[in-house]
Length: 196
Image (cartoon, rainbow, N blue to C red; front, side):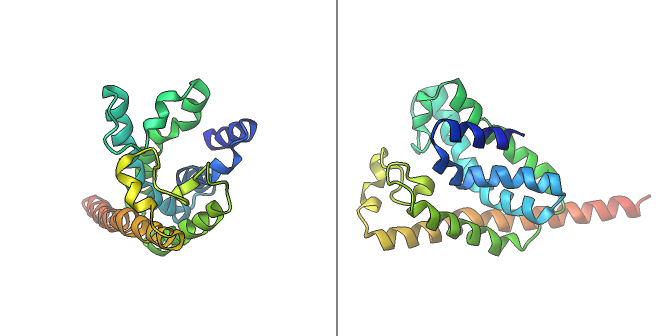
């Protein structure tokens, strides 16, 4: 329900392109996965969000309590009003929901599906206005000083680096952790049943 409200509000605010952010798409995938009972869809959403949302939460928690955003990717949230905070609030509950719904059931095929989804989103984001910078398709957090050298790269190199870095730093560690956690949960579940 929140995913639908998120999209409706973005359309109303004329921020429709922001629906293509990986986090917003994974929010919608979570809703679809829950409605359809699809562990494959839920697994892609979780693999896509585990690391990026953890970084978002870390940056927001420290920045909103101290005024100093260590990474800088959530510094813009200080200007949010009630409506944008409502739209953004899923960042705080989505990971626990996904972790609970995929415990012992993570689909390892998410290792290929998640980067493929992100590649499509990145290509679509490149067609969006540079000012919206969805999925950091055009530049990396331009308000943050440490990203300036990266943002000076040729566009094609930056886009390839975006996809590779997001896959290697975001999706691959998430997949590795989630497959091991799921295997441990499945093994524990089998052991618990055999004890009965």
